[in-house]
Image 1 (cartoon, rainbow, N blue to C red):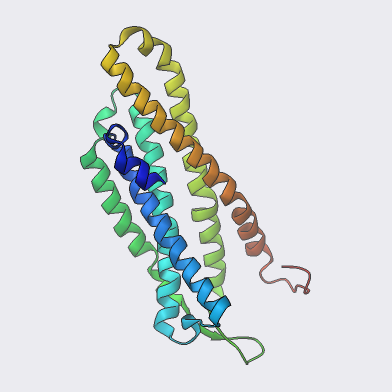
Image 2: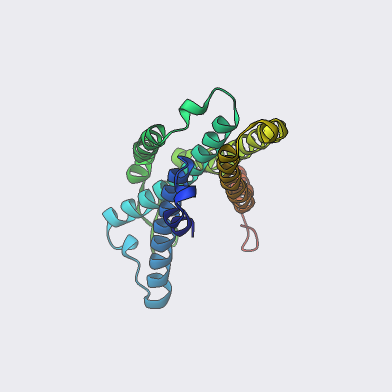
Amino acid sequence: LNIIVFSISKKLRSSPCSLYFIFASIGYVIYLNIVALLRYLQISFNIDPSIQWSWFCKLRYYAIGFLLMLPRSYMLLAAIDRYLMSKSGQHRFSSYRVALKMILLTFFFWMIMCVHLIIYFDIQISSTGTNRICMNSPGSYSIFLSFYSLLINGLSMPLLMTIFGLLTLRNTQQHRNQIHNTMTLILRRRKKQEWLILRMLLIQIIVNVILSLPVTIYLFYAGLTQYYKKSMFRI
């Protein structure tokens, strides 16, 4: 939906923030399609290439980890962009050129950061010795992965998006009355467009935080109890 809205509307597309929305949406679309396709093959046809080929197992989790973090990072950059736009004297950091640089830097950053998934994920034999499972190596890496997922994906991303969203909202509210009285009609229309983009961003931040909360709670619980003996009724 974001891709369609920002591609059709020239007014919304004129904001550098639109680039972050578009690339974040593309990342989410690719991620959801990959996950849905693999799950469909597994459930409908009992086909799971990740337990047949080691390279596919590694590539699967690398792609999922990479595509999960990339769009959320673009949403965070969109929140930072709106904060800079709402702060006096910082408009020079909100431009198409800066946005493209940040998009590329973020892309390569997560490509490197997710390499550990290729190294430590592989086909493992289940505890019963009968089933093949694509999963991470047990031991210290399992602990690292639990807290990495909790801190990076579960806490830092939603927290930073919330902080910048609230700061932007505060700055906007503080200057709104002054701006309304002093600026020209053209600038008022431009600010109206910026306010519309901000509202769209805040809605998506709220959705991200709400959807991240159950995952964060689970990751925190799993990290604390992974070495506890559990019954069939306890995850």
